[in-house]
View 1 (cartoon, rainbow over the protein chains, first blue to last red):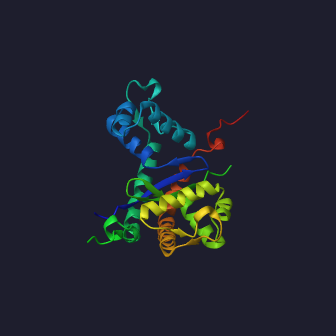
View 2 (cartoon, one colour):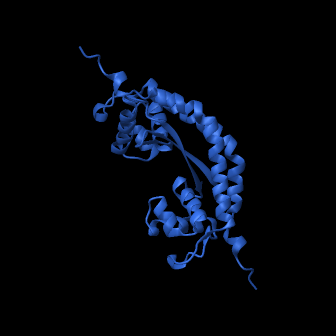
View 3 (tube, rainbow over the protein chains, first blue to last red):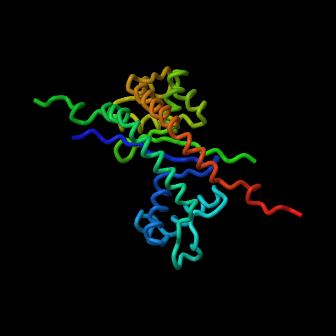
Length: 123
Length: 123
């Protein structure tokens, strides 16, 4: 058995309440691709309602919309320049971080005792 | 009003299920200081039960204990070498990451529209 992967996840916290992580960033990226909140939500495995909630949280945290044309969920949705900036900064941080965290993550993985290692030899 | 702070939070994911972030790491650090799960849990604002759950999640993820001497919550608790290694790696990643993410975080903060900026001038 291989060692379970140790991976790094990032969240950007805005103020006290809003956390922006892979869920929200992935959703924005899919809206950018598909031009549709419902299609994007489906792709990332969430309901339209949940997708809209996450967008609304970001709109409130930044004081202006990250997605426009969303009323009622009909017609096209478009990620705003603000939304694209947020995605770009998140991915920028992530790329730098994954690079420098690699050695520590491999060392953490090596700390995980797999069943074979802990098993008493049989017979 | 100042811009809401944009801060970075890290989680190390072990396999599919276990996430190790500030909550678990802070708890381990307090147990190391106090020699007591209940005192540590109190300091970080969680119940003894919750503290024990977090320790148990780590014990399972790594296949061996991160804290010893914990049965029943009486007597001293001690962070194991494994537990100290996990804390050290987490803090090591965090220190490097905070350093390289600073510029992106300041730029994200600048994207937040504060009430004063968005307010229409009165009179």
